[in-house]
Image 1 (cartoon, helix red, strand yellow):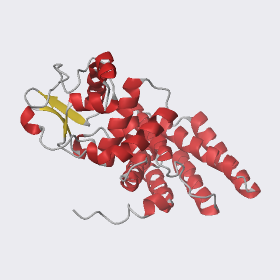
Image 2 (tube, rainbow, N blue to C red):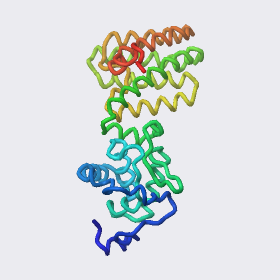
Image 3 (tube, helix red, strand yellow):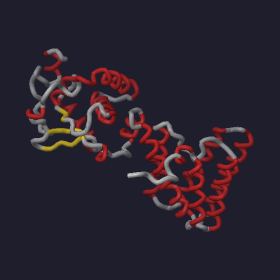
Image 4 (cartoon, rainbow, N blue to C red):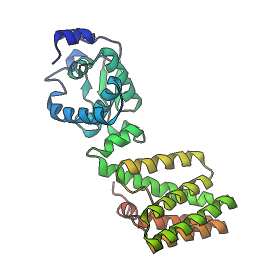
Length: 287
């Protein structure tokens, strides 16, 4: 709890309300203890990690702390977020609280409406490709779901990219793809997993570029970065092997022949071998 001096310094009167126009929560919703009481222990842990891992000021740290609490489920859907309670709990000014809630609203985590206040939104409303939300989910209970979803998304993007790339006869890029397969082969023979992985990563990046769809390229970059943050392999092979190398070679051959269906099929075969994908792609989901 803040002292009176600290409260005055932050613009918050002890026991008073932080009265700004950003979605104040009606008094009728303020039943029971503050939302933070049940999460005090986790809050301290999250706060220390946020402060230690990012060079952010109070505003950035509060966004980080509240975001992690929402994504982890400590602050569940439709939970009212009372600005004055946030200010008192974290000992920050009304300006910091207001700006932090606006950032979270832009990410789809909370909503603010007149006479209703600020509330946590359901997962279906979150911007799941937002870099911060990806990171918060990677360290929370939704980590496995995120890895599965990202693997499925990649399985959708890259076969389409391979099909599109077959219609773009850029010999320079196709030659570079062949070079990557050759490098992967040499790395495999020498047991150099690092070089193999780098060549594999560049292979897929080049193929996405060859597809000629900038939105697809952008989305693929987000997925690759998200897979790395989530702790899942961002490359197409769990470990270097002849089978992985052969699938890459088939993709190059199909591209050189301008055979779009073959290029797409070869990419699907390659990604289905990936352990993160194999568990989730072949069988359709039950609803």
